[in-house]
Amino acid sequence: MERVFIKDAPKNLGQKVRLMGWVNSLREHGRVVFLDLRDRTGLVQVVFPESSPDYERAKKLTLESTVLVWGQVQERPGKAENPNLTTGKIEILAESLTVFSLAQPLPFDTKTDGREISEEKRLQYRYLDLRRERLKNNFLLRHQIINFLRAFLTQEGFVEIETPILTKSTPEGARDYIVPSRIQKGKFYALPQSPQQYKQLLQVAGFERYFQVARCLRDEDPRADRQPDFTQLDMEISFVEREDVMALNERLLIEIVRKIVPQKKIQEIPFPRLSFQEARQKYQSDRPDLRRDKNDPNLLAFSWVVDFPFFEKDKQGGWTFTHNPFSAPQPEHLDWLMKKENIGEIITTQYDIVLNGFEIGGGSIRNHRPEALKKVFEILGRKEEDIEANFGHMLKAFSYGCPPHGGIAWGLDRFVALLANEESIREVIAFPKTGDGRDLMMGVPSEVSPEQLRELGIKIVGEKNEG
Image (cartoon, rainbow, N blue to C red; front, side):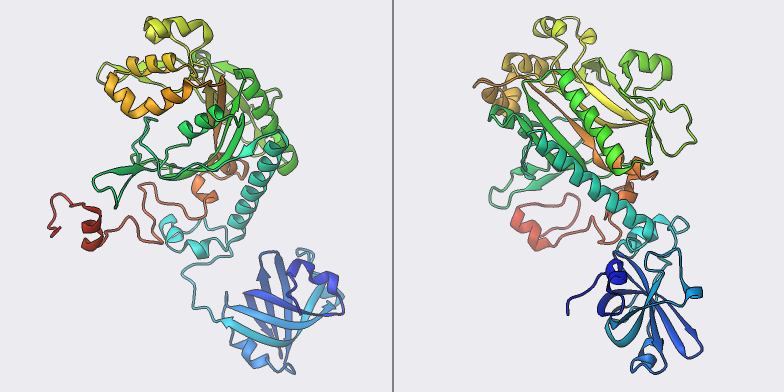
């Protein structure tokens, strides 16, 4: 007989079923053992009367042990019904018990929401922490959102394409994680901060509408609510202007809220728009929290911030980009870019989407003209040979009939956290790291063996190494 999930047990009234799951609770009343059995779909009461052949074994079970129960689905006595459970009108009269794994005492209670437990301990035992109802609901929400956006974008003519994880170092505002090549000793790959260059090259390739639920990695300094590896919804579209990209994404965000979290209320549709200067002057922030009632956990105040400066001065007095070197300037400022004039006044086509005071996405119309993209790198102080070595492949690709294109990337972790009313993105990432990048469960970062280092041709500076 096939396994029956607990949520479907009431459909089998009067029949015998095989249920599998975890022991959620145990109690004895007189000569009866009551076991609450839990699987991913729900909770059900299992009854072991003294006449059951496995009565004594049931008494010796421990919480969170995994078991198989064979028994008959029957109605509970009227006064024993539990209105708080979807299975509260039935119970399982057990006929046999199989113990898959007898659990040792847990390091903490998984029945609470977990907020009373130190985060370090929760991350150390994350596989247990994930058993709690709050986190389970967070990941069901995350799944629903990703499933919905995939269906929506496919309906809109997008193609989901995976891009490489081993790639070339790119200047995107953070340090790269680098990976040594064993075969090409002394040379390195970089892990992608984003799929930026690849998604633009896919537009050159003619796919026109690309998206990806993309893993991104950035070697940033410790920050409380950042992760070394995180997830983006990444998209790029050919033959569009700024308004096209913004309209599509606004529609997608509205539909996600309406279909997946209908209890939430969007404060204003269409989303209000603010220029960078207006946001800074009026709210002292380029990601303002526009909620009229900040005590309402179900209020969502989306807004767009546009008209960002393209360049700003760095600490050394040179120019650096504010968002992305691959962005295009506003059309009226293209001439300034080409002549490298009024650099501090050039406005980019960047647009950010903000939700309740957090930036959840950002994008721009891209610089699809190779000569204009080269000017950006010149303004950034790159030498000719450096531009060719690092970006020659992009400049060459753009010379073969590159469509005008633009895109956006959402911080998917942050978006899900906001919809789940969670303060930290770690609550919606299955196996997150601490603020300083440690995985307490796996014990990384960690040392590797001298043999591995020798094979890669690497020597640790300042330490004894026989390589």
